[in-house]
Amino acid sequence: MTTSTWAIGTAFARRCSGAWTVTPGFSRADAARLYSPVIVDPVYGYQSINVEAQLRTPTSLLHWLRRLIHIRKRYRAFSRGSIAFCDPANTRVLAYLREYEDELLLIVNNLSRFSQPVELDLAPYKGYAPVELFGETRFPRIGELSYLLTLGPHCFYWFRLERPTGEDSA
Image (cartoon, rainbow, N blue to C red; front, top):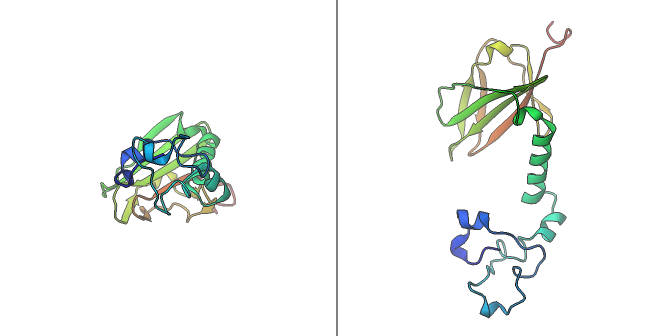
């Protein structure tokens, strides 16, 4: 459990373990005798930031991380196979392709704190259909021109590129 308000938003806060229940931290000691005071903020305090509370909230960070891990485990291309970096003109966007066996993934990351447009040269994948992995949302097919995306601040997209089938290429 983070121990003071100066730690909110720092690396220290992200590395500290969180409380499992609505009790402050892991100690049974009187709060006044602790090394550092616990956070009593209603938004970032132990009353709302604990595993028990996050399990009850479907939109919590805990549930989001579980979905993220589930997707990474589902696609072996994330950890195996080849990697090919795209070279967009916008240097604030990191984009690359991961391929393993029959899986082909396109990963696009906005490294900026501002929204960023990006044009990706995906001409070798003309006709492929990008499908976003979190919501299984189909994006427009890749054509001859650069593929355009706009990413929000620190946003990322994970796409599965589906090969065109006989009826798709017509």
